[in-house]
Length: 275
Image 1 (tube, rainbow, N blue to C red):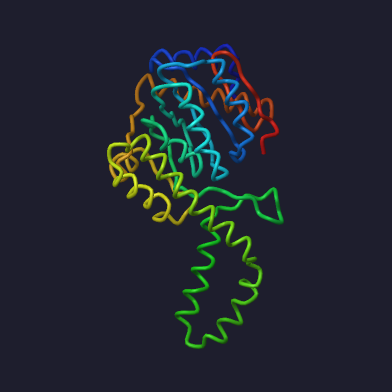
Image 2: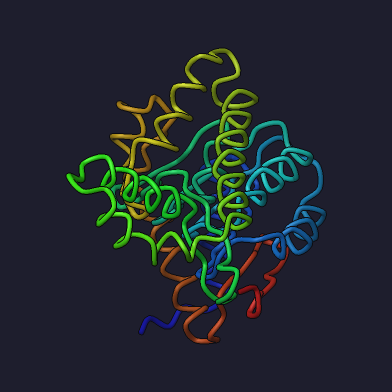
């Protein structure tokens, strides 16, 4: 395992700030994103104060549907220009944060994902479920019934599955799907595509409906050329700094067994219980 000192990590953070002429706010998380992050995020933003430009150094596999919109609006209270730097992974709800920026900085290994936020399973509360999985289950049953030569037999086979689908839960999951679409469209219309509302609708539809795998990799080339997002390629010295900082966080968090970290040059806040 790499042994990277706190001083070296902060020097990397300062190096990115200098190269980007911005204030850097890091949010690295290996647990689902939820509203738990908002208060420590606000504390770090207060330590920065109102500034021209903030870069969010973001690594997350996603989380709750409402949180990304709150994160973007909170950060924008403290800056005029907002960018997201993705060292490795910004999936699902984290993708929603990224598309709320003015630009997204990506390297060779960086990836976005489909907009498919997670919700807690109603019985197994430690389990987070992609909301699209419920809709796909229903689509599967409808398709099998439509294709069946004997609908009675097919229905009897599918009944044990459908019987487990609580209407209240289905409604809640469907609400989450519609909310993710609403949030994504608003984030794009208000920020990256504020001069092209039609483009915002098209990209929202693509990112919420086109991809079937929750873990699908949208690399920087696809994000730029296919989706038309405002992508800045991080290469050369810039990418070396970004990747080195990500490895420094990975080393720090493994050493302390933390799941989430929020940091600026003014200090680090560890969030070990954010899951």
